[in-house]
Length: 101
Image (cartoon, rainbow, N blue to C red; front, side, top):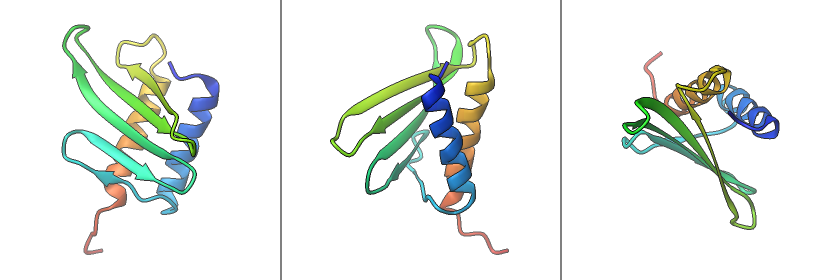
């Protein structure tokens, strides 16, 4: 589960990405990343074979280059953070797409 502060930050990332304020890059290895002036964020999606679940790992880097990572899995009792991470992942992947209409 995400700590409350991180949950609010991830929700804000979703809102800002959907509003086209943030542009993410997708590296085709199941990760998206965004670099801004004061922070960078990377969201990794993977299959955890040891625990037989899927997971998202958010890696946040602040302006002083300190890294923090937070993990949510499909096995968490409360799936709301996992669903929020999935929404960010899908929204971020789509943010760089050039669609014909």
